Amino acid sequence: MRERGFGVHKIACSTFYMCHKVWLLFYPKIHDNNDPIKLFLNRLQSLEKRILTEAAETPVIVYEMKRQVEGNRKIKILCCCRQWEDAEIMVLLQVMYTDLDFISTFNIELDVLQQFLYEVYRRYNNIPFHNFKHCFCVTQMMYGLIWLTDLRSEMDSIDLLIMLTSAVCHDLDHTGYNNAYQINARTELALRYNDISPLENHHCAVAFEILEKTESNIFRNLSTEQFKRIREGIIKCILATDMTRHTEILNKFKAILPVFDFSDKDHRDVLMMIMIKVSDISNEARPMDVAEPWLDCLLQEFFNQSDMEKLEGLPVTPFMDRDKVTKPSSQTGFIRFVLFPLFTELANLFPCLEVRKFPEENLSLEREKQNWTQSEKMVKPSNLKEPEAHPEPGGMTKPVNL
Ligand SMILES: Nc1nc2c(ncn2[C@@H]2O[C@@H]3COP(=O)(O)O[C@H]3[C@H]2O)c(=O)[nH]1
Ligand SMILES: [Zn+2]
Image (cartoon, rainbow, N blue to C red):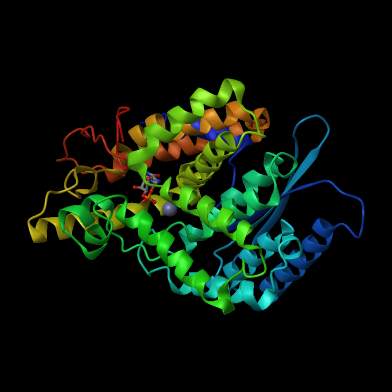
């Protein structure tokens, strides 16, 4: 367990070093005062000022880091460490749409975008993990990756719009009980979708329910052809977040990697699925003080489910059982066999995501490793057996057909 986060952190140091509770923005170093990115940054800075003034009692640390990526292109990371409120999150999501030029490219009216984001916010449930903040984290990771990998130069705006919107919508109306529960408990969702990815099908259907209403249809000014393409793309991306398809999708990606061609639609489709999958499970690629509270939330949701399974006499999902699971046991296999191989393949396509060493971050890695070793001792009750292997997404310890 001591190596928890070690390999991941190496990636996190360079690639996926983003925080869910923070706002990070990657942007190329620019000098043009009219550059939309610079204008956006000014807006962001005023937002930060407002936050600093309005919430003086909230500890806020704003800092900047400069990093070297690909040749001489500098990337700046602006990071404001504090918990964002839901309203601010909606503003930040709006800014992502603006910043990627979706507003102008697709003629999206601001009030329609705001209404869309509000409806999205309303349709995320107040549950420990799969809530609106998780939606934000995933979207923010997607947004960061799009910039970091310079995807705008390789893929067209529609693909990027599909990716960002899929991230926003990917867990809509999640009930906090996974597909296994839905199927075993024969819920309405399992019945409706014949046990086939009931949750993901539902997230998708809710997304298009929101988009059915003219006032929240951000695609309303697009042609029928464009809408068709977007709908197909979003469905593909959201359905790809069902972890039972993990191995299938990762293997597809590995197979095309040596000949990856951005002009091939099938290749782009697989990449889009990989991007949303990476974003979806990226908590552990964030700094420890961010990742750990998310793990607590995830375990809380897992434990709620297994409690319910016990109460209803249903099969208990082992990696969710509070009597069996510890924080380390839930993470070792997940990081080693799910997260790391997936992130590594993405980094194989985008060399700019490769491991880069930063002396100060290596120091913090050491500190984090020590912290984890200590917290590991604290979290594991003395009467608990060694962690068991759980061949499922939440706690797998060996690669299996998910
Ligand atoms: N053990 C573990 N599972 C995770 C972690 N992040 C995501 N997952 C699992 O991966 C799944 C991805 O799809 P879901 O969001 O439905 O549910 C998620 C969790 O079951 C993590 O950090 N640890
Ligand atoms: Zn998710």
